[in-house]
Length: 201
Image (cartoon, rainbow, N blue to C red; front, side, top):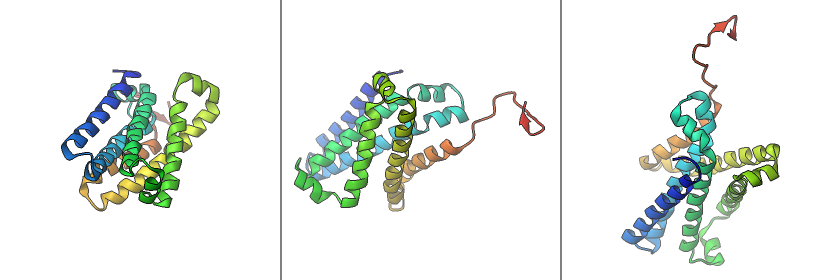
């Protein structure tokens, strides 16, 4: 599967996960909190795939990493959908009221989490050919680079902290850490390349 159908299927999968949770656990606080945790995990996996796609392709070229890079835009939009559902569940937990939302959200979370959502919205809006062309290559790259790193920091702060409290979060913290590490790894040397006086032949 390639292209925009990925977003549709990702939406269906995340929606189905939430529906099952709310059906089995209920739509009260326990069910909503479980749905919030579940969508945080689907979001972090989708985000990490999009975040590391280009670096993975450079470091380990092959069919899987080529697919990731080809569909990076769709994975990013799928992440935005998942995290949008995550936000809806948070608002539902607050009773769909601004007062309830403020009462249940620490100020620092409101500031930094809100900024992350602004970046997510802007990156999603500029993930289409027309809007990307309107923004221009330089501004597009700046927005998506700064936004992606900011979102990574927000995820890392939450998942790394939770990893110290429960081993259940280790895989997700590992995915985040791995995504950052691979972005800073050098690209693999092309097959057949050799060194000659310190330079690639």
